[in-house]
Image 1 (cartoon, one colour):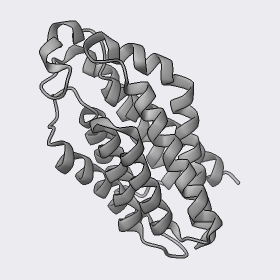
Image 2 (image 1 turned 120 degrees about the horizontal axis):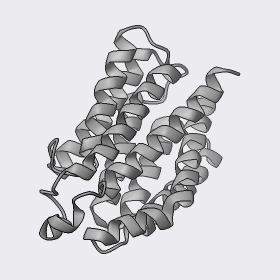
Image 3 (image 1 turned 90 degrees about the vertical axis):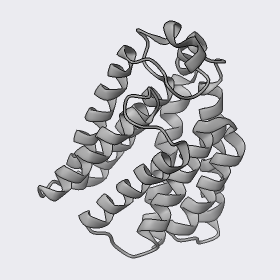
Length: 216
């Protein structure tokens, strides 16, 4: 429905806000063992996603169509691997949820699992490779368990976001096995992975947004 599409648009705007806030810090973190463009790339991607979602919403699109447009533009405009991964993830969430008038907790769990599968399949990274997957997997596992245990959407997102942020911090102890940071593995040690950090930041901000909706 239009109301749920509007909620998805607002969630994307929250993601953009946290990326804008941390753009410079993400770039500095990426420059330690990469080319320093993670912050700029995330900003480009999420800006394009929000613009596409706004256009879709104005045209009366449902949630699936809105997220498909947002995902496509995120991938196209961000450049780099993380842009392709985020684009695929956003599109997968929309495709799994479809455009309905209401969603169950099981629908939400299916959407999070689709997001996880899209990123893992496209990125071909595993736990311990020092990528965003190291934050993504604990997020998806924690969310699914919380929902299955009867948790609310906001409460389950909060627990999942906390798990993602903690796991992102823990990537500081890992050596990269994928991506451009791999040849500079020694430099990367002691610093968390930028992709994992940005995933944790977005997860936390979207969880905060979900809590405000639930308390209305």
